[in-house]
Picture (tube, one colour):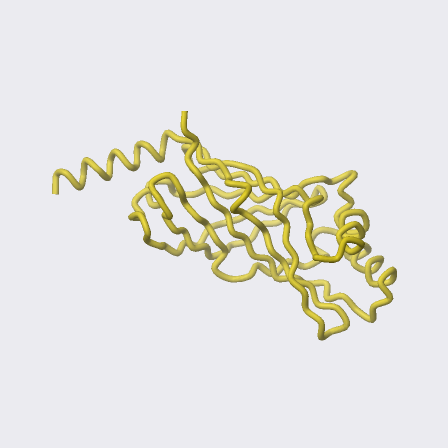
Length: 192
C-alpha cells in the first residue's frame, strides 16, 4: 500500500508540474454539415496547437485555414465566406481540468468527465458543458475526446450570413444552420 501511495504521489506531482502540449499530428476537430436537407458530409480542422498547464488551465487554438472538406473550392469558400480567416484566423477552446483526478487515471484506462468549455470564434465566446472521455494512453500521453457531438448553431457566432452566402454560391436549397462538432485532442508531456 505504501508503494502505491508513493507511486501515486510521484505521478501526480509529475503531472501537476509539467506542461502538456497538444500533439498536432494526432489531434483534430470534426464537424458535419447537411445540405439540401438530406446530404450529410464530414469535415475536419487539423491545425490544433495548445497546452494544459500545471494548474489545469487548457487552451487549444484551432487554425481555421486548415479546414478540410475534400473539395478544394469548398475549403476556400468556407475559409473566406464563413470563417473569414483573413480577419479571424483562429478559434479557441478553453477549459479547466482537475489535474489530481486526471493524474489518477491508470495507464490504458478511460474516465468520463463533465467539463465546462469556452468556445471562441469570430470575437464571440460561448460556454457549453460537455462530457469528455479521457484515456491515459501512456505515461506521457492523454487523449481527450468529446463523448457526444457538441451542437453549435451558426447564430451563436454570427455565421448565418456566411451560411447564406455559401448556400447561394453553391446553388443549394439549404444548408442546416446547426452542426454537430466533435474533437480528439492528444496531450503529450513536454520533456526537457
